[in-house]
Image (cartoon, rainbow, N blue to C red; front, top):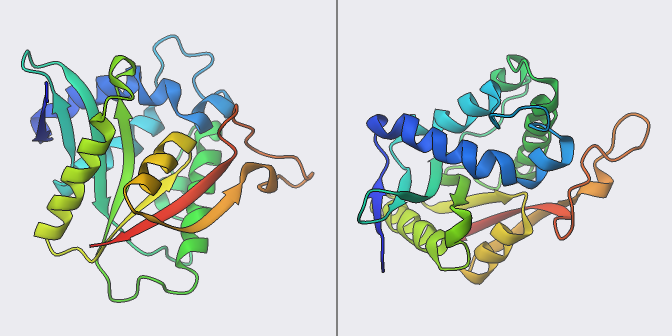
Length: 215
């Protein structure tokens, strides 16, 4: 392996953020579909930055680093918190109307997945964001990051890992690693008040799917 998997520390905050701005912010299917960054030359959104970096507080995040120090992959994880009845603060405080739509979709999925109290009494690690340098995709970096994530989750006595995949590529990764599909929502079925789809990502991204894996 030409790289090492390392823990992300608070000192890596700017480094990780710059990586996400270059690869995840630009390439994520929902961001592309809604034109979140279409008019932003620097490919950023403050609300998206804040949302992405909240996971750093949980000390469960990993990065893949080359011997020369170049960052080639990141996975941001956190401990899952069941949704509350009221609208989450991260939605109500969001100033960007486009990104708010993405947050509302994620909250909708979260509520559907939790509707039967599937996780009552369980500690669940949530895989929130995974991103790989475009030059290193298809070379096992994402898989290595998830494998190390699951290893850490077991060490810390989590009962289960969960991932909500808006991209079919991350979904295929989870399927290949033995995750179980527990919920899916076709983007064509998630509509506004006029019956029009809110998101229409480019093929092959047609749905958001929730996966879990018992540890």
